[in-house]
Image (cartoon, rainbow, N blue to C red; front, side, top):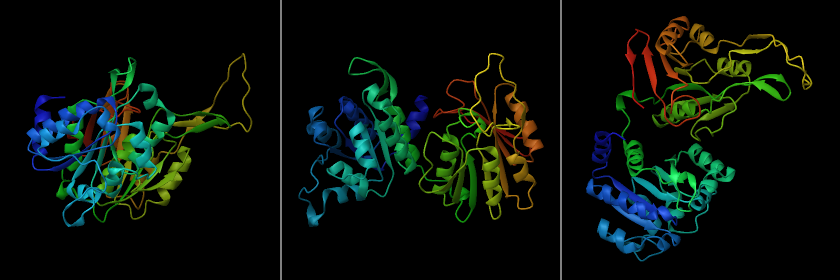
Length: 393
């Protein structure tokens, strides 16, 4: 991460009330570095620990770093008969769970409150940031991945682990993310929204994910879109007060819990769902990667393998963006996306004009850390007047 950007993030945390929850993983020692940086940035930091965290790091270290007692018991004696978990939840503007074990992820998503940390998270009204760290096979376990996606769908924030040498002696994804990334996540969730861009009272309709165009009952034409972009936009719009509806194809992540979500499969189904909800919509964002073609005729039975090959006759799918932009009930703002492999800006400008869009977001899907299914992106945003915004990753 850019050093100046990291310094900016730390400055934004000055005076903010942060609870760092340490759980029982070998990366618990790295929580000491995080706490130290937050204290040096003049944040008000409190630490709580699970019972298992004590096997890896001691309370004395955190007490020395923060100058405050470390919370470990749910019913510790407090002034005015306060309960420890309620006191911590009221204090925290944000809770950072570092490291977050597979155990804590599973308990929180299941609503289990059997210790101070899980109960405090359940009682918290502010954002919670999980920084998972564990054995690579545990991280890739479908149950862990399901829990992570469900937590994201419920509005929790995940700083995904890095790839590298793990404490178990294996190499893979499971290392605690760099402290700078965790700091950046804390700064991001505490950064106040631009009051001038408030969407309170606005209705926002967003499409997300891929579509599937079936050749026969078991085969289809599609693409690797995960839905992450559309759902991220939906979550931000919801946080800014908008009434958000998401029409999503078959995605690999869950939609934000604060939105109304409708699941579809084909481009035609997505088009019908969008047009049925268009009246009264203020902003439409077409973030879905809609398949451009479908078979002219889908087979009723599985198509058998043929040594001579298979000829397919494809026809265009509905132009959802075009229909929305030409509709009598056109929203005030229509935003399109363009996933390109070459001539990124040129192709995006053509689509901007042809579809009569107010904004278009274009990205090179073949570039590293950009495109389908990743948590980072690099895009060009073009306005209707032809001016361009080119954000960094």
